[in-house]
Length: 63
Figure: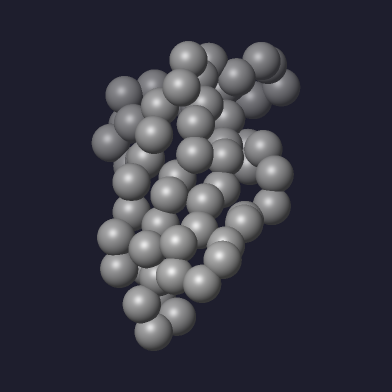
């Protein structure tokens, strides 16, 4: 996500829904875009949690 935001300075990330998790996996959809404007893309972050900490993170882009 950091690399993605570095390509579009001034973008803000807005969570689409609250975090959802069941056991070890979880996800949170998000939408980056200019402040006060429509998002330019979106998608979920999918995580694998081990001992209460994020062990792996995948960012899925959806236009």
